[in-house]
Length: 478
Image 1: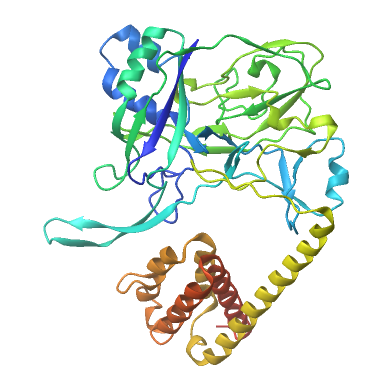
Image 2: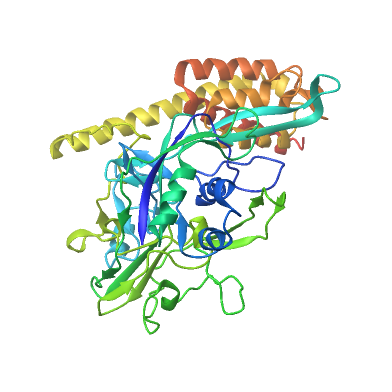
């Protein structure tokens, strides 16, 4: 098997919706699926040679991998579901490995939360900060926006850099794929407008040969990590969410250790541009899932498992270093607890002396408590001063504002959604007349908080205000 490594640079924001639905909030995927690169290649090569078409796009002989973000010019990998961190960190940024023999002891120090989002490498962890914009369909006859045709897009940010791998059994196939992929292309939604422009480059002069791999058990266990979504089917072609050892190319007599296994499932539907319709729904196991098998011998293992391998599904790693604790420790040192940025140098902080750590922790706790107390006091004062304006607005309205403040990460996006004159949430609909006296007051206060404290405090402030007023409304049955 041979492979090429490609770099994908976003020349504009791209929209890769998580679902095929067309209403409500829809976040973008936090990665670029391999099927997008398969589609780019198919546009150039599909149908030119029947045997080649079958080999490249309808078999397991070629795999188009997912593109994940680069951190410090190094590839990242999705967060394993076996990772745990303190729900209330209080200065403890350690990463704990679920299923470790000392995991119960680690839980005694405070509740641990499963980590699911983001990507990481040795230089740090990054979560994709998606952009949000509201668009309107255009009426060509009337030369204006269409009525009742507003929609919002979350998108992956422009200029970010990503990396993916394409593998094939034949060098000749890989060379043609390389020629088809390099250059500028468009992917995702709204490709005909401002979204979807990417540039793909390959810096490898020669393709890399991948030889078969063998793994040895560690402490009598083999760890299997899903680097991409995996689709397992049973003998009847139905989704299988309880894969056995044979599904991973391991000896069939190996037993799964359920106490250490962590997996999640989801479903999705792909849009087929050739047929201009949706494909059948797929039930898959999510990337980041971890399975652990009992094993006492060295075994030969594959690189891909399951169905739909050509689209990037089924990429697995066996005994990856970031799932193996050193010297039996329950704490993992994998770079996950460092803050990174896409293709930027990670800032390395110097750890304070042990005698200064307690003082630093106490000062941080005191500062955070004071800031939260001041924010809540200011919010209660604001509510009392404007109670006469807010008392006619029902609890469900405030509940929606609280939900929106929790949904958006940037205040400018929330402001666009709530306060845009003419079609903002507070400027249209059945309850629009109830907001006429109070929406400007709320907007001015939110602007003031954002200018002085930033996005995060503003969102927390609006959530607190909306929650408190909603409680009052319920007491008064509004």
